[in-house]
Image (tube, rainbow over all chains, first blue to last red; front, side, top):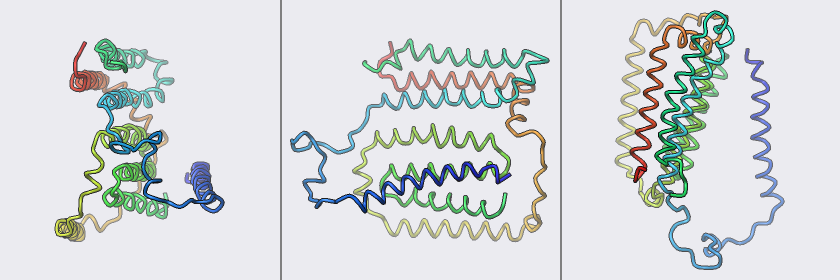
Length: 123
Length: 167
């Protein structure tokens, strides 16, 4: 059982090892310059920077993220659906229609968001 | 699942959970929370609850953490950096936490059923995603559609609340 997860472990080891190796090699091989206060300020095309290094984002991003979560939830229900679909469809087509109806209910929300301009970036 | 793996993932969760609280940088806290969620997903999978494990990764570590990161971007990060640690308050908090865990340990220690080992998990030939799927689409079709309506309501609520002027 656990043996089946060996490829996952290997992949994690390779990913972490690669990231660590790149960091360590860049520290060993690279030359680090002297750090001064001026060097640590944000680069602003030669001008004195104004405001903060991390500007605050518009709430528009948040709207997109929340819509993403809602449609992500829809996808979660498709996992068990896809798993049982093949054996269930043989004796009844209910499973197909129930998922179609589920998607069409959510499609109403998608069309609403589109029509209300929630996904328009420019405005 | 060997207890060895359980201790690894439980330890990982605890270390990164502490990292969430102790980090002064909110982005680092959020990323620690992601690792903590991944450890939780591994624990779920070790209990043969693959579906919950996958959802833990997909919805919590993926989608909800994206929301957390967006909230952090909306906030003013300087206020958090300037905040001083109130030692008296943290000492009080630690005292309350320790008292609570001592109480819980005491209750569990005196509880008769807690001394018996758990019966082993019933081995099933089909995986849990299968169970969820067949139950959801055969016995609980109407609740499934109602979930769809619920998500639809949430979608409309999001659009109404966060769009300044509706078209």
